[in-house]
Amino acid sequence: MITGTPHDIKSNSIISKQPATWMLLLLLVGLTFLVFYPTLSAYFVDYDDPQYLLRNVALSKFGQDWSWSGVLHLFTADAIGNYIPLTSFTYAIEHFFFAQDTLSSPFIFHLDNLLLHLCTTVCAFFLFRKMGVGKWAAFLGALLFGLHPMRVESVAWVTERKDVLYGFFFLLSLLAYINYIKWDRHKITWYLCALLCFILSCFAKVQAVTLPLCLVVLDVYFKRKWNTPKTLILEKLPWWLLSIAFGVVNVYILTSQKVIGSDEVLVHYNVLQKLALGAYAYAVYVVKFVYPYQMLAYYAFPLHVPIMAYLCLVLVPAIVVLITWKAKRNTIVLFALAFFTFNVIFVLQIVASGSTFLADRYTYIAYIGLFFWVAKAYEWTMLQLPRYRFHINIVLGLYCVLFAFMAYNQSKVWRNSVALWQHYIDDKPNDYYGYYQMAEYYTDILQYNLPDPYLDVNDPQFNTLPLKYLDTAIAKDSMDGRPIVRTTANLLVNHGVACEFTKMYATSISNYTQALALQPDMKDALEKRAWTYFYIKKYDLAMQDYDRYQQLDSNDDLMYYHRSLCEGNMNRLDDGMRDVNKAIALNGNAALYYITRSDFYKLRNMPDSMHIDAQKAKQLGGDVPAMLLN
Image 1 (tube, rainbow, N blue to C red):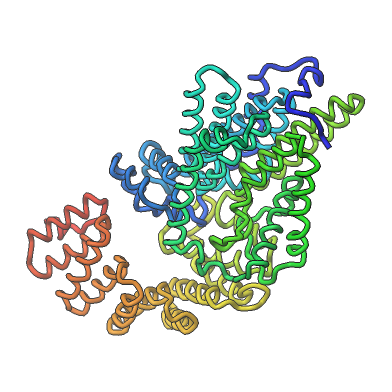
Image 2 (cartoon, helix red, strand yellow):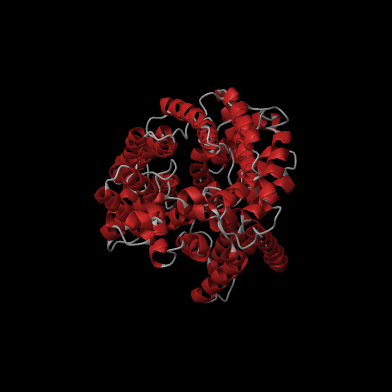
């Protein structure tokens, strides 16, 4: 075990010739950039990218003009259940200045993710330096942080801009705080800088609320009187209040959007099982720090809690307490353990939010504590075992090469949705989820005409691919061969959509009906069955489904719009006008709604109103028929 205080080990006792800092930083940035270079040629993935970015109505307006009201909206609204206004704001900037056509401009989004990761890596180097680590050791710790394969998800996935953005401001806040506690000059300035960076970090991702705990750990490390009311309460009061405020806002949004307590959590556990899975996740993150043996985009909750999880529930707390007790005077070990623990404890899914109980991205900042310990261990080893310096450096060099190779290859996995989910299928061939996601991506391409530079959409067999993968997913349904109602219903709905591409409308309707038999309140199945009935001109049946849908959700603008089309074809113009008015009242930014209402005005011989709506639709970017503009 490493012993001593932060200032016991002098960097000049390890290596007599210290390189210039700028040379190490250049090498650090260059190596990290090369490892993640494949991400720059990646496309978007059909895994939250459409919801956060591609089809985000709040961002679409920035493709035409800058909107300060739109910026205000980003800071007062959630993004699919997450409060990440600063992250959304960076998307708006990219959309306005560099990517008016977002679908054809993935490069800028991937480039900015990588640049933010490089900046965070540099911050890690300076953080280690300010904590008394020598240049070479700080370089090693920062390099491992920069190219660790567990970083790939945060860098390569556009949606995870929130990781690299919150991480950058998180480390900037720590750096400013260290200046505040170590320097006598400009203390108020550094304090306010640290606080501002903390706020920006929280605006990027709620995971930043752990930062006040990290400040306390820094106080312990630098041997401040951390537990006095002045330091722990008065000095930290703004941090505690902000942390609680951001936490409450995010919990409220997660709850209101049904992310916490969602039916996406397919398996429900008792308290003991949740704690066991949390301890198991903690242990997995530690093991993956040493060797990331599996890197997937999705880790499903297990149908049965493994025996290993119960063992972890006993061993993990015991080991943490033992290390803390043994190292109570060793601030290096205490900092490493506490920093890691504080930054993963709230993402152990003890209170489940979503359908995955592990995620590589959750370790983005947490591993900083462990990388710091590696850097200090390297210094201590170089000092205590000078005869083995060469051998140790060779081993560490090979270790870095291994990580670089793994991260480089993992970056290629994220080049598009097909590569991502094929990787998942290769790892878990008997799990339905990879086939389900693959089918959903091909379905989205066919539905929304999404471009993908890696796919040949002109292949005559292309429209059969969703059915191919969904047939396999249904055969694997859903976990360990045991069907779960919600999963089965989702698969049936997607199978119904896929059948429509091959004009198998009767089969589509049968699929939707089976899904509704499993889940009578499944809005997606109702909406899609209604639309299929509408398409084959069975308007009465479509209206029955729309009326039933309205009973489940009376605030869905798209439902009112679709029902108005149905009513228009039934020559029920008054009803159709009423429903399209309701759709516009709920969402006044949809050009299609104004086009349809303009059509109704034309049928009712109201040319002035027809022209007004047609012009409004044109302003919103709609493809307005010429007969409505004349």
